[in-house]
Image 1 (cartoon, helix red, strand yellow):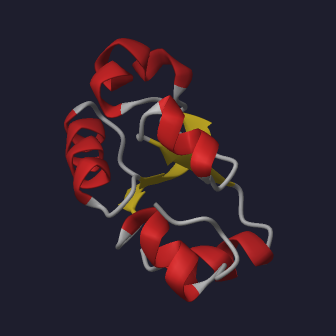
Image 2: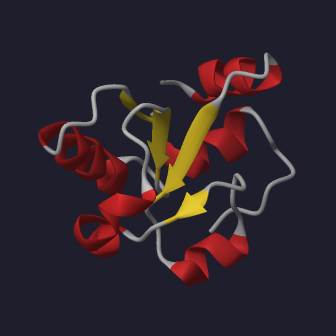
Length: 101
């Protein structure tokens, strides 16, 4: 999912679950208001996620979230998307006032 598609879906009021798989210190710099579960914690925190919801996963640039999407799909989550380019792409193309790191 591109940052522009995510923005359009959020603006439309779609019930998306935003999953941030970065580290807490990264979340403090900038975030999309999503649910923070660092990638390494994801296997033991799967119970915090609802498989019936549409989930958009992001990290800084898209690598960690791609791993998370693969893991979630293998764990039975069907409706999962990776935010292409991560929060960096969001900051460059959607919210240019957002802090970058």
